[in-house]
Length: 363
Image 1 (cartoon, rainbow, N blue to C red):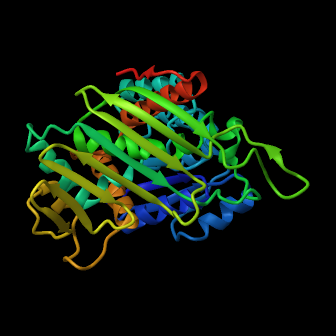
Image 2: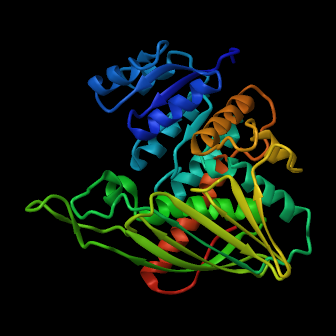
């Protein structure tokens, strides 16, 4: 790999732009771009001085890029990731890794056999105070966390005239709100606490039975929200509320992980503080490079009082990808194994919502 990694971006929508900006912010070069049409490809390539517009995926791979970022609609992930793996190129794939567990298993196995670096951008792991909570919980094996609860709420689909490819199962998969954002919360919970979800009981709901402009509405088959109860391998119980149609909630990912002596709460819309509750006193910890967690310090480049957020998380994720491709350890980098884990949880949640029963989550 060159000193400045050469990166291919597949997908020119919102997430493609997020990936490209993060890559360049940490020293990479966008070397090739592929969109859904020649005009979109050319427009996106024009934003980056070193980018070549690719005619197709084979053309992009022929440019000799060091890593490919897949930022396409969900139904294309498995097909394109499989081709990239077959070409022997490291791959970053937006979640979901695939729309079926079988495809996610196949991709993970193929990448492992090929010995390739893979990644899935569960970037909320990269908040410094998330890592501070993780370090404190890991250092206290007797913490006794027994109640793990939270929510992930948005409102971007709160208008019945708003339609999007994610709404349609053929493009986005059988689950929408949970598969799109609920898996972020589950990944974060398991990453911070070390607990693993073993059983789920879910209920899906819709704000609207139909979507689209007046006179051209179509039936909605995927959920606008979900309520999920779960149990973990360490005997904790938990609950998660997910919604993409909660007015005023732009991107509120919130958790509280509770024990009898200590509880930890975090809101990613206010990522500069970690609430630590005790029976006798409560502490609100502000982000500061002086905090004791070495991993928190690694993602804490700015002095206290200079807010960091989502963009910084994505840049730290991109830097970890580059480090891994370059042969350097990247502790905590979410890989295809984590994408497969998310696919298994999503499948269990969807099955539970359909059948109305507790459903096991494979280890």
